Length: 158
Image (cartoon, rainbow, N blue to C red; front, top):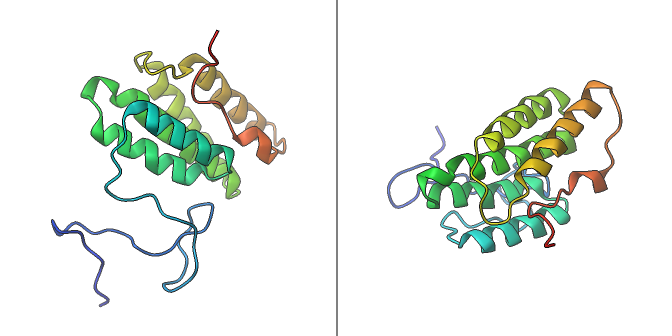
C-alpha cells in the first residue's frame, strides 16, 4: 500500500497537484498554485482572496480559502463561512458538469447562509438569491455561462 502524505500531527493531506477546477492530477503533473494548508487571514483578507479566485474561475480554490476562514473564525460565524464555502463547491460542481452535486451544495449553502450573521459586508441575502437562481437554471436545464459563476461575495458599498 502506498504511503499517504501526512502533516506534523499525522493527519493525512493531499499534496497531489490540482487543475484549475480543483481536480487531482497524477503525481508529478504541473498543476495550479495550491492554497496553503496553514492559511490564516483576517476576514477581509479571506474575502478578498476568495473573490480574486472566484473572478479567475477558480471556485474550488476559493472554497479552500473560505474553509480556512471557517476553521479560524469564531463559532458564531461558522454558518457564514460554511455557507460561502458550500456555495463555492456548488459552483465547482457546475464547472465540472455535475448538476446533481451542484443542486445539493447550492441548497446547503442557502440554508447555511440563511442562518449566518450579517458580518464583514458579505451580501448574505444576495448570495442566497444567487444560489436559488443557479438552482432554478439547473432545474430548467439552462446553460450557465462561466461569467455567471463569479458572484460578488461582499455587497457593494453605498
